[in-house]
Image 1 (cartoon, rainbow, N blue to C red):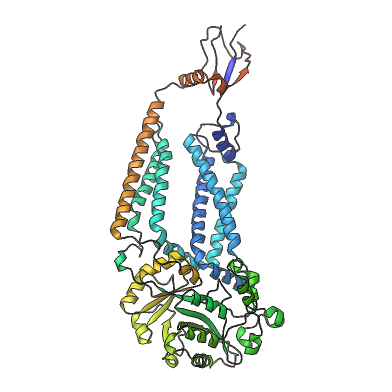
Image 2: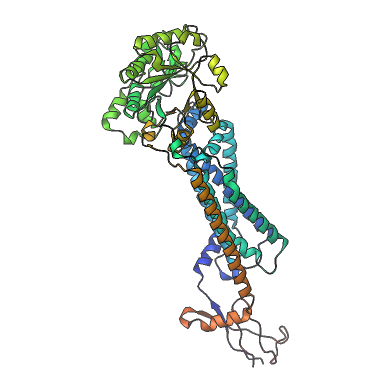
Length: 579
């Protein structure tokens, strides 16, 4: 009969490792974990996880920068559905949840790779990754259909964020060098490891040279910075009071705007009034006063009917900019009693404040009695207001010959020769239409440039560095707090930062590879049995959980004899000498 000493299995407390493998792959037990290479199937899921993370990172960045145009997005949704709602809330909520979830899984996966653990994504997480991927792809396709022009905000925002994103990306890729080095310094190097190293070095080299492709007007000598662009109150200050109302324009003047911008429509009896939408449904209580006519064109109502509508209650009920809570009780009471504003009232307010006015005119439908005289009706209102014609800027391209006394601006980006031929000395362009080079060309030919909509400090700073004359904004109260560009850096200083960050990264990457090579070479000099036995011998008994098991050996089944000197320990087993 074969006698043997009790078999002892030593379990080390590995709470962090259990947490990583448990959350990622539901492998909470020690025997469920493995240091074997991950299967091709799990590697494919890791690639899907990385792709989903990259797409969500792009998606989150887009919505972060698109904050400048949230109001426009909600207005587009309103024109499609007929109901006003903040469509950005569910998008931002799902994006935040999805991005946090996928980022958490990415961190767990990278920790698995760093610790040499086998990847085994739990099936519930696989469903979650696919759901996040499909949802994000659907969102990208939908936005491209509904709001395709907004993709330009990404390239424009890089003029402000590019230098900082470059440093962040360089730091992230440099840190990833630890994982790459662990893989490629192994003795059993394969073709995969060579490809991995080449891809990593290619990405790193591309990041080192990335500043050559970064162009920002804020990389300039501060002595060349032009004066602060004037701010135009776009429909007044629509975050502080209902758009295109007298209260909104008064709020804008209190924020120090240089001009007031308004949308003009002509009523059925020829009175120009201010209204952005084609109908009165969104910004008045027409559903209560004229429920059968709420879908009619706003210009098909006479001025008496329009004046009877409330133009402020919708603002308190819908809270389109989430700003109602910050209003005083006095302001709320004033808003409840607001009516639709006429063009004459707005121009008189501008004249008293010694400010200018920028008018966007909408021609009434063909069946309108003033379809052919809408321009003359508007000019008559300008004369009645008493404002100087030089302070009124005209935007329509039709019948410019009748309004020679007014300031002329073009909403279309034309050549300098064409603008001079039409007698136009300024342009009013969307920010996506005005590149830094275009702005410089127009300014060199004495053409002033106004850019809209500019609601975020970063965009205002970029345009300030570009030299624009003025910007049209829904948030004059925000831009008022920007006394200087957010950042301004001389070309020499930027080159110094670029070269320094590259050299630091190179030094860290080389150090990581040298350390990993030394670490791996040191581990290869030890016998695994000696490491296990010595580790067990040195560990204090109070830190060791000992599990005793009885082994039943059979000479027939196992072929064990008394002459066997030892069995090699595996997975922490320490087997004594047989007697």
